[in-house]
Image (cartoon, rainbow, N blue to C red; front, side, top):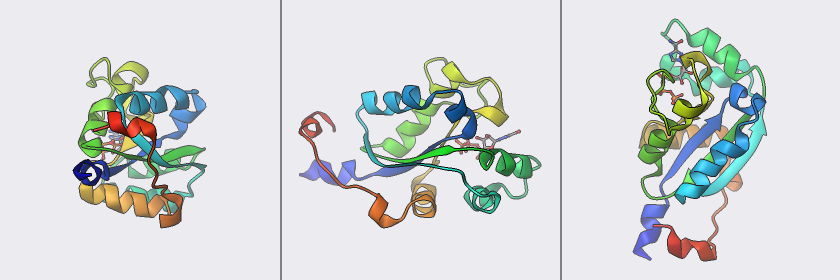
Length: 155
Ligand code: RTP
């Protein structure tokens, strides 16, 4: 039972329009699934530019901000919430460094992306942003709590 509190850690993961259009949804989901994390919310959405600006509000002052928001709102984004012990930090590890030129082989960006402006996936960078991003993208009733027999193998 104690394990449940740890499992309850949740992070927001989004496959950006380039990842969706390149047909990488299954590949990316499969890496989180095989690791042993649990999918608790998922939907395909085309965010408005306003919404993209909200999502990236921390980067408002950066020179690439408007291009980034235009890009995020340019097509379908697969928004997800993944749950499990250490999922925020380890999710970032599965994803790899922001710049695909620097991400290690074996990571999602290292294996599947080339340039920083088209790095196919987003993952929350800490507990506060995870909470903030989950509540921006999902309403509480879209987050599914469930247990399965496999749970005895998920720590
Ligand atoms: P993410 O949240 O997407 O995992 O990325 P991050 O925190 O590692 O990187 P951050 O600095 O928050 O940047 C967010 C996204 O902005 C785009 N970016 N473009 N020089 C550029 O053109 C540039 N730098 C960053 C990337 O798509 C990055 O994921």
